[in-house]
Image (cartoon, rainbow, N blue to C red):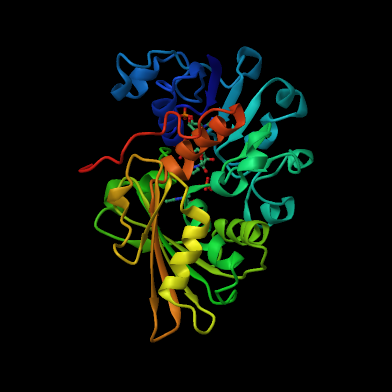
Length: 344
Ligand SMILES: NC(=O)C1=CN([C@@H]2O[C@H](COP(=O)(O)OP(=O)(O)OC[C@H]3O[C@@H](n4cnc5c(N)ncnc54)[C@H](OP(=O)(O)O)[C@@H]3O)[C@@H](O)[C@H]2O)C=CC1
Ligand SMILES: CC(=O)N[C@@H](CCC(=O)OP(=O)(O)O)C(=O)O
């Protein structure tokens, strides 16, 4: 069994990693770290793990952690301090945050925290599993993409790569459940502040905009300038992205379906609904699936793509486990076979 440790195990993403990994057939959870709950039993912090995960939380001290794979599920800015070439010599690292996802220039412009690990940015491999599989297999450091970005990129890369969409016309209108904001206390995620309301936020300034644009260039081969507007909706989990783009003349529904099938027909975790059903968050909850649906509006010449995933699974912990499986040479879906939970 491979030894696996999680820094930030008491956050929402950390807890999803624990849920996926405690019964993964090839790993053993050896260290769960916490900032606020050191020396507490994990099942006391999260009683749904009672009798299943009884490890005691420890501090984030790498000298006390001996692991083959280290997951970092800490807020932005921590991983770039923690990950060093020496650490990477002894362990594989999968970072759930943004520190190694984008260029230093974009990070400095869009994040309000200092970056300490510039020298490792080249070594870090972007963990969009379906699009970077070969590099992930031999990576030592993975920058795991986030939820909004995974949903947007899986929907858009095929169309950008096949040059059927006007690169200046793309608008991503995305909605997230409240777990997307993490477990830490903040006014915006209090029940009375977010229940019974939907709000847009980060207009023109959200930090996922440069990440989506950078990766569309990397995997789609085109410079794209897009509009990304996230919304907070009163549900626990899920991302729904409604994406609009002007199509090149003559591109039809059949053409779009053909393109998606070309890239995704053998992808277990991408379910192409085409134009026969519209993706919904409830059909992917608790699973590693990303559902993609679309329809071409012949009147306007636009395509409307609607895609959905679970922000904490395919948008975080699930994709991270998928990447670990790839790095270890294991079957890619190990530990990720669960069907979505409905009703949830
Ligand atoms: N939530 C989501 O849907 C997604 C999140 N991510 C990324 O995953 C990472 C974790 O997110 P999430 O789980 O939501 O966040 P949470 O706020 O739920 O959890 C953060 C974790 O980091 C620990 N922590 C917080 N502050 C400190 C600190 N000052 N020093 C050390 N540890 C600290 C917390 O410890 P303690 O509980 O003990 O206080 C907790 O374990 C982030 O980088 C986020 O961007 C990526 C994709 C989706
Ligand atoms: C609802 C909510 O607040 N969501 C978070 C994104 C969560 C996430 O995925 O963050 P990273 O991809 O950067 O890791 C936000 O908009 O900042």
